[in-house]
Length: 340
Image (cartoon, rainbow, N blue to C red; front, side, top):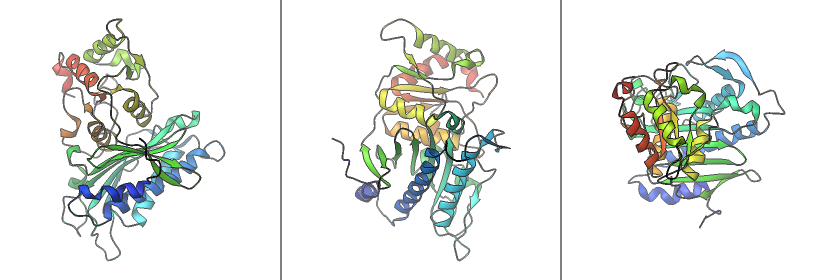
C-alpha cells in the first residue's frame, strides 16, 4: 500500500538504519538536490510564459546546442550545491571540467562528489514533452581536506553511493536509490514537499515495449537490427510496442513501470554511442539494477566499465532483464561491434 504521508526527508531519516555511521551529510546533500529540483520545476512549468524556450546560440563541451533551460538548470544545481558547501566537487554535463569546492577555511571536509545532467531531454521543452534531471553521488577517494582530483570522478559506476532522477511531467517525481531499492516521491506543489508515492519500484522481468530512435536504423550495428526484427516479429507474445520519447528520464521511467527496454547503440554516425557514461548511463544502470532490471553496453555490464574521461560516451541497453539479455544474445553474434 502506498504511504502518501511519508515525506522524502522522513524517508531518508527512517532508512538511516542501513548505514553504519551517519553524519547527516548525505541527507543534507539530497535536500540540496531536492531544493534545486523544485526551483527548476517552477521554471519548467512557466516555460511557455517566460523567455526560457529555445537555444542560447552556444554549444556545450559535447558540441551540442545548449538550450536556455540547460543553462538555467545547470546554474541552479551548481549554485545550490556550492553555496551550501555540502559537497567537495561537482561535474556537470554542461561544464568542460569538474569543479573543486573549497570550504570557508580554504579546505573541504565534505566527502561526497556529485555528477549531474541538469536537464536531460531539454530539446523537448519547446514542445511541452517531459524532461528530467539525472544525478549520481560518490564518495571521494582522495584525502578529505585536499582538493578533489579527476580520479575522484572517474570511478566505475559500481562505486556509486546513490543515484536518481527527477522527471518534470504531468506530476514532478524524484526517484532515487542508495543501494537499498528504488523509491519514487511525487511533489505536492501546493506545499512544496515530495511524498513517497511509489515505494519499491521494480522492472517487470519481461516487457512489451522497446524504445529506440528507429530513424537511425540504417546506421545501427547488425546485432541491433536483428533484435529489432525479433521485436517486430509476429510470434509468441510479439510484436512489441515501439515507444520513444527522446528523453532518457521519461523513457526509462515509463519502461520501469510498464516493462521494456531502452536502447541507444553505437552507429555509423555515433561510433561510441551518444549517452554519457558518468552523467546518464551509470546512474540509470544503478537504478535499473536496484529495481530488478539490467544495463549493459550490449556486451558488458555498465557498472563495471572503468571511465577514462569525464565526458566519455558509451552505447546503452537498459530495462527489463529478459529483454536486455535477449538483445545481448543478438549482439554476441557480432563481437567485433563491441570494440568501439
